Length: 180
Image (cartoon, rainbow, N blue to C red; front, side, top):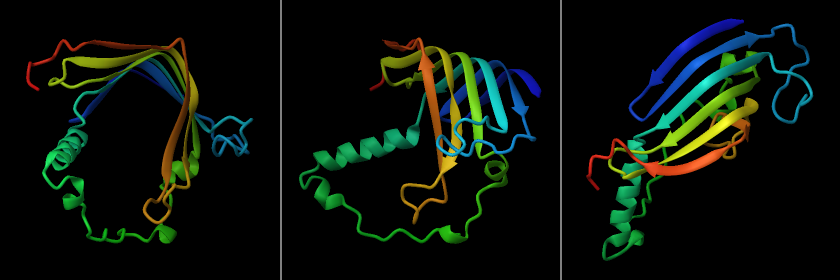
């Protein structure tokens, strides 16, 4: 078991903060949980316990840029039909049928997750409001599965969480800069 506290990971679009937690590896478990269906009654080889989690999604600039582009196209005289792309997507670098799942997911096909007290906040400085999803407890599993579009993706990451005592609030954005 590895214990940690005060972990912060920030990128251009998101930030996650963890007050404390632990990572437990149960290597001797066999059979182990593969996903939510296979060996569902078993425990996973890896368990993550977290306390005090805050996940902020504050920019997501690529998604905003895509929405702005779509709105511009829709409001143009010809509408969206004049802007539909007809080019063919290039093939993936590695053919999907030759791709090998990363070692992490082969060793730990499922990861048990347990969170005590957490919050997900979605906002942006140019928006006057933000959405806050607070919960007292979350319990679930993170796995990989066969992707919906097997020709395009190598694998699909899936996280199933059951949230307890959840509250969703739309509140004023304290970082709102007045631009829109």
